[in-house]
Amino acid sequence: MKDTECPVQFTTEVIGGKWKPLILFHLERGTQRFNQLQKLIPHSTKKMLTKHLRELERDDIVHRKVFAQVPPRVEYSLTRHGQSLRPILKAMSAWGKSHRARYGTRRR
Image (cartoon, rainbow, N blue to C red):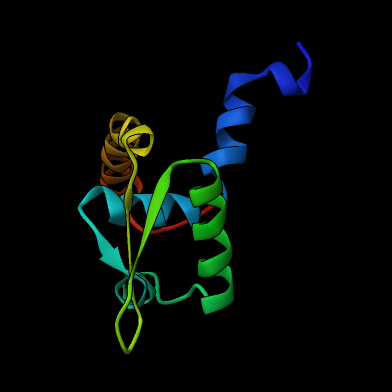
């Protein structure tokens, strides 16, 4: 199987990485403003958060809504297509809780 045919690799190219799963986890809980996401993901830089949100928007996973007001307000939410990731996000969350309970916070 070619790399481009592997569905797991394709999925990780769309939603993988250090920050995208965290962005999706927080958006799965509901619409968030950019500043809220920055507070929820404090180790991400503004530049990286913006980059990943734009990539998720490009891939029709995240919807960006801009309000015409001063100061500008932008909200992010999951698209219908992005909502189809909910079972994956819930499974990742459950696995993470189970793994943490089993091994604690130590990392290999």
